[in-house]
Amino acid sequence: TGSSPFPANFLFGTASSSYQFEGAFLSDGKGLNNWDVFTHDEPGKIMDGTTGDIAVDQYHLYPEDLNFMKHMGVDTYRFSISWARILPKGTFGDVNQAGIHHYNIFINALLRIGIQPFVTLTHYDIPQELEDKYGAWLSPKIQEDFEYYANICFQSFGDRVKYWATLNEPNVLAIQGYMTGAYPPSRCSGIFGNCSAGNSETEPFVAAHNMILSHAIAVHLYRTKFQKTQGGSIGIVMSTVWYEPFSNSLEDKLAVERAQSFSMNWFLDPIVRGKYPEQMREILGTDLPCFTKHQVDKLKNAVDFIGINHYTSFYTKDCMFSPCEGTGASKAKGFVSQTSKNKVGYFIGEPTEVDWLYVNPQGLDNIVTYVKERYNNTPMIITENGYAEKDKPNSTHIEDVLNDVKRVDYMSRYLEALATTIRKGADVRGYLAWSLLDNFEWLDGYTVRFGLYHVDYNVNLKRSPKSSAAWYRHFIAKHKGQRLS
Ligand code: GCO
Image (cartoon, rainbow, N blue to C red; front, side):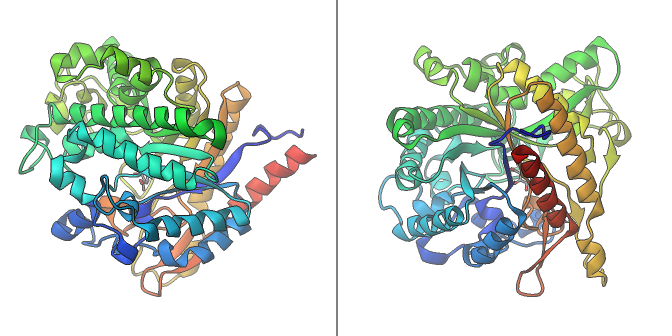
């Protein structure tokens, strides 16, 4: 082996999701999902009033996208299956064969060019019917519907798909869907926002509880029924932030622990260790649901790998015991710790054009090391990392837009940090860049661009490589070359 820190079967890839990429929102028998309904009913909530109806139309334009991947030399492509394409009404009953057919063709096309499909079962979008019928994640009923859906996916695609992630960023979904109400199903109460229904103090924990149990049930199903013959692995994808104390005070250090407890560890502790973080129990008391003995048994070690989405780092200041000014979250149990006095002190590293994204490569080394130690060196995959630029609608110089030197700088520094962590012994199995193409960035619509390839929304969704695509191609080739030598 050569001098590359990335091990021989390390996966380089890019990541995406169904709602952000596919479009074709009414094609081939697909049912409506929660994001279809949300973007249509409340256009004011999306920055530019757009929807994912067409998105970047990967549903139809995928052959071209596959060529880009092949050209870059990636090993894997992470995408999500649209639950509403497979089960238009979400639940037991008719499977939409056209949906199965679409993903079969897509998966086969990836494999034909030597790219491993890496499938997320749900990346925020779920059939609207599940919301209407019983409140989706708020009801334990979703556990069996998720199991039913997962079973269809394993059965239909598992002979060829060797990497499965159950849920994408459930920690973000629980907060945005049920505490701030910013994402569907737009539930919140009190100081958290203006929703027509919800309870920000309790519902995030109920929804999360059902997500955790749904995950565990799907993993159990995969392990008992499919894994032996299909030989793949299954995990979950978490949104991770590296938190640093704002000052050296004990309060701020405890606030950092609370911040991790109330975001990443909220899910990973149950899924790996079989229980919620101690601090959550102390702060929330009976607002935090409990697991039965039987559930605990299913939960422990219910991942083959931990998927880490990582972009940025925050300073963390205690606001629970000494109130912080100017933050709406100051009364939120536990979560208070994630805020600080002012924007200047809030993020770590160099600012970007996007307000939540600051450049701190060291944060990736830190978070991976933290996960390694807390979760007994469970294998990890960096399932997302990437750099955003604001759309510049009036820019006449497409060359400038395509020459994304800042993205190249960001990726090369984060990958260097990752190499350092791996040299220190972390078991990281892959790195997936967010994202292959510019795409629908949730509440930011098409105003924020994450792609290695540019998409022209005015000219037939024309794709053009940015400098970062060429850079990534060289980076991958260099590391593979070193492995072979
Ligand atoms: C996720 C993320 C992605 C975003 C990306 C950039 O849930 O995995 O929200 O879908 O597009 O993180 O913000």
